[in-house]
Length: 46
Image (cartoon, rainbow, N blue to C red):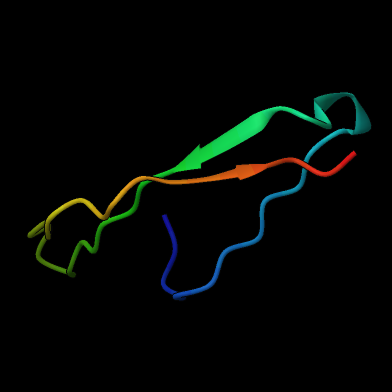
C-alpha cells in the first residue's frame, strides 16, 4: 500500500528473465476501493 503514484520494485539477480505482473487500484481514506487497473507485465532485467 502506498500514498504515492510511483512505486519501485527491487529484484534479486536470480530473478532475471522472469516476468513481473502488476495490478493496482486506489483506496481512499474511508476504505472505498476503485476498480482494478489493466494488467501490466515486464521482464525482470538480468
